Image (cartoon, rainbow, N blue to C red; front, side):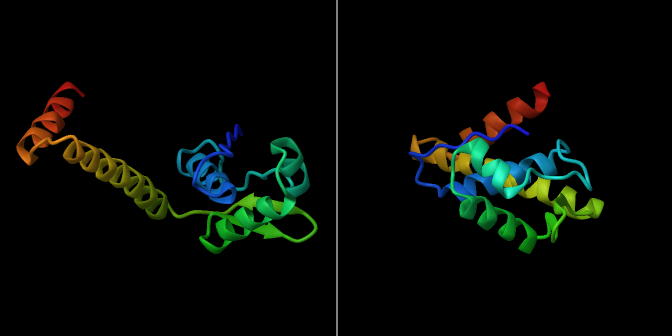
Amino acid sequence: MKIILNNSSMIPVYEQLMAQIKQAIIGGDLAEGAGLPSVRNLSAELRISALTVKKAYDRLEEEGFVVTVHGKGTYVAATDRQLAVEARRKAVEEDFAAAVQRAKAVGLEDAEIREIVEIFLSEG
């Protein structure tokens, strides 16, 4: 699992870590039951506080993405297929929302935005 953190980002490091682990789970790069690196190992590898990694793992557990077995480690939780599909859909919707917002910020009209989307749909 490749994690890249941006220390100069306005997004807190634990949220960056969470987002990348979630993406790996949703994208299928981390399979159900796969073990995550220990808090200590990941914090050493990323050169961040163990508390930051622990916070990210705790939040992922609260959201149902991972399960921690005390004394054993943290593992990707069993997911139902519908939940995974919904998570992927939400990620795409967020990307579309950001793209539409960017398009409007540069002055594109709704019709122009729809035209761009139609072009991409016809190409794909």
